[in-house]
Length: 328
Image 1 (cartoon, helix red, strand yellow):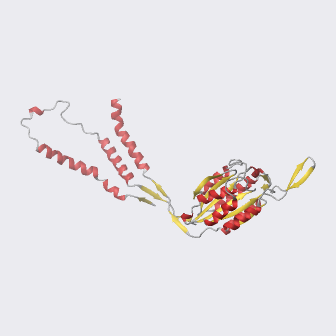
Image 2 (cartoon, one colour):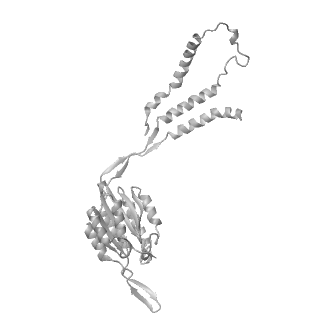
Image 3 (cartoon, one colour):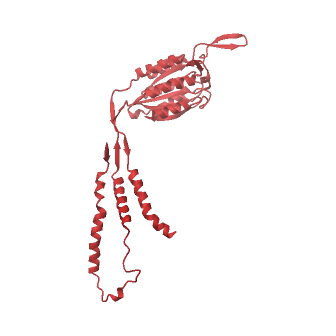
């Protein structure tokens, strides 16, 4: 649908006509008030006898430029179709471990063995795409915790920055407590929204200034619910000089602390031993934190004033160009 945001601006359209018909009257009044004793003293030379009237094409171009300027001032807009947007009032932050242990390749994706971070990106990316209506944020942590994306409805940007994350970006160790502390700072309880943190790690807290349990207690006091996900297989076969042997690549995973963090904050702990389990966890999170059914109707607005404004500027340039050319 087409509309004008400021339709009253169209009342200026007849202004040139009013000025055109009013100016001769004013000129006649001024001439009547002029007292001349003799006309001979006011004879014009051959080159000064009468002012040169502007050419007809210049008048039409000027009128067209005025029409376009008034049209641009009225702010024409094109309203698109109504779009239904779910509104949840929920702030959801993802905290992803980028420590060196995330290099361990104990996950399978489409028949290919991949490291833990790549599997986490793949599944978390799908989860982010489904979170329409939530404000999303992203924290990356290793030896330090960094806010990669503040809370935003722009899930595409959050998804892109998650895919661009690399191991070691935040250091080689694991600061779980600092990641929770940073989430507490960014998920403001004054906003009145439901606040959720999803923390994914494959190790234990080995760095940072805040202990994970202390951070969990602060989160509980602020109404922040934490879901923790322990990543890593329980068993992996390695080839050594003495043959094959079974090892536990998740021996450093501190499941006890992750369970306690979830319990204190009112969340839940999940264990992801492979890609299938990780996918099921995020599907379960969809059920634990369902999308609301309330819809907000919005109409996308496309501003069109730039087109008549650009044409008016071109016409003005066309009027001025001959004079500039003669001066040059």
